[in-house]
Image (cartoon, rainbow, N blue to C red):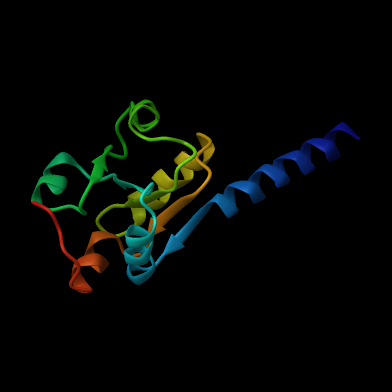
Amino acid sequence: MKTILSFLMVLMVSCIQVQAQQTTSVNQATKLIADQSELQILDVRSSGEYGAGHLAEAILVTWGQKDFEKQALAKLTRDKPVLVYCRSGRRSTAASEALVKLGFGKVQNLEGGIIAWQKAGKPLVK
């Protein structure tokens, strides 16, 4: 009985995490940025990549650093939506999952990353 309850609890938590982190297209992200004044934009690339160009008002917390979680908790608010991006979408997918585990309720991962953003002709800040 304990095993079944444990399994159900793990399954329920997994479902909640899947719902909290979603992938969004460039067009959807543009709309999110325009419509949500509380949206937090998180760049998880390196500082060099960030310096070469980033989304306006993006907060830099590099994925892969030992203190990623600590920095994310210090710089972001859990109850506000977060748009996460990297170069192509790989690092931001992992970072988005980590944010959900940290208790962030609404996490959007930019599909295709900054490559897709630039390809769509969207602006960057340098």
